[in-house]
Image 1 (tube, rainbow, N blue to C red):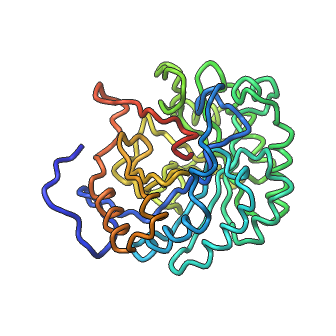
Image 2: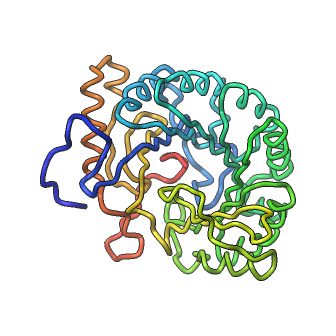
Length: 338
């Protein structure tokens, strides 16, 4: 972690000591999930008591506090966020916060089909759906639950509701799901979806085995060999976590999130709020700031804003996955927020 040489300013953008400006807030609305994906959580996971979760009103107040500080982009996550009852109401509430320009959602898609239209009508416009395999047996191996047909129905419902683009997230693990790269890429091209492949990261309950990382260049080689040639995209946000590529024939786009082989820490603009109100300035952070007592206890806006500024100011240079100094967080992905 960087040595602190000064204190954060009380105005201006949300910056850290490396000059990174933060405008992207990921909010987990629940730690509960209806799948048990091997790279995310334990089979015998114990979830938090629902009373521990921030209420919609507390989430709304936090967003009202950070929007004037420069936060203009929000992504709702979990756990599985669609397990949080009446989520469309929260989306509608957040859409009304001055300064918020963009609200997205990451879901496993199991519950999406009957909810897609109400989410779109509430103001949600960006959606990412997790789908690691099209083979039912492989899907069950990774998710430790059935549900592939429900996910596919959710994808089609999202398209019908008006979401454009619909992005598909797939974690690719060597020897387990690397054989799904080509089928998923073809599926996305056929149905007008944007595919996102994610390198296997050390954030699950199991011991992480680096040799199971299926690297970005291998994913791209599979696609170019068996699907269609790709060219680097030019019209995308350089601070986004995915390296983006367009098919040469114009029929679609592919993104690669290479957290292990090509870390993007030095362009990171994200901060996270966990379901129970802990602020994390990095997915792999080893410490957190507990904001729930302040939000629940009526603390002054200025006090909460100052804590947010300080937490982001103290953000480290990067997660150091590729060094001997890396320490795996005690929390798994479902408890942090995807």
